[in-house]
Length: 287
Figure 1 (spheres, rainbow, N blue to C red):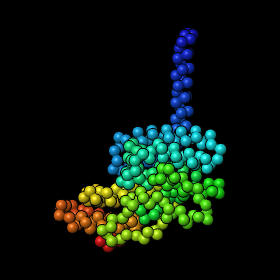
Figure 2: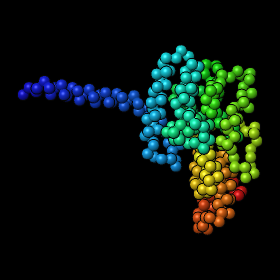
Figure 3: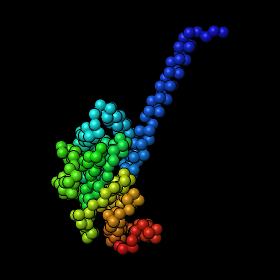
Figure 4: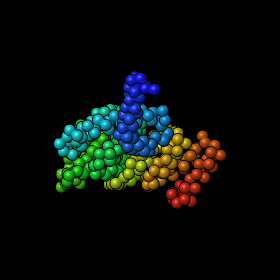
C-alpha cells in the first residue's frame, strides 16, 4: 500500500534533524573534550553544579575566537585579539585568592587562573608558549613566526607585550609587581622564603592547577582552617611536586600537631598521612 506523502515528508524531516545533530556533535565534541579535560584539573573543592555552565561559557568564547582567527591577517593580530578579548570577557575584578571557577562565573581573577585560561587558548590555537613561575607570580611567554611576546594576565591595559630579544632579560623585573605581592607568596612564618631571583620555566597546565591549590591552602591557613589548608596543599602536591608545596605541607602539618583545637585522634590521622608520603619518597622527613 502506498504511504501518504505526509509520511515521507515527516520521515525526511526526522532524518534531516538526526543528521544535523550528528554533524554538530562531530564539530563540537573535540573542543568539549579538550575543555572538559583541561578544566577538571581546577575543579577540586569547587561547586560541581557550575561545571556545565563553565564549559558552556568557555565553549562560546573559544568558538568566537575561531571566527576571529579566520578574519585576522597574521598570527600576531590574532594573538593580540585573543589576549584582549579574553581579558575583557573574564578578567573583571582582581583577587589573588580567586579560583578558576571564580573567574569564569564571577569575573574574579588572579594570575594563576588568568594564566590557566590563556594557556588553554594558546594550546588549542597551536601557539608555542611557556608558563613562567616566579617566586610570587606566573605569566606566559609566547613565540610565533620568529617573534616573542609576553602575556601578563593581571595587566589588562598593557599585558600584551611584544618582546625585543635583546631586551628579554629586562622583561621579568617589570612584570606588574603592584598586583602580585600576595599571589603565590609563601607563608613567611615557615622561614623558607625563596630568592626573589627564582624562575621556573615550562610549567604544565597540571602544575599550574597545583599552584591554584597551593594558593588556596595559604588562604585557608590564614582563615585558621588548618584541615582545609592541608587538604588543599595535598592536592597541590599531587599535581606539582615542588619545594614550594613540600614546605607548605610540612608547615601545615607542624601547625596541626601544635594546635589545641584539633583532637589527638585527628592529629594522628594527619601525621600518618604525612608519614605515608615520606615513605613513598614524595616528601622529606623534616618537620
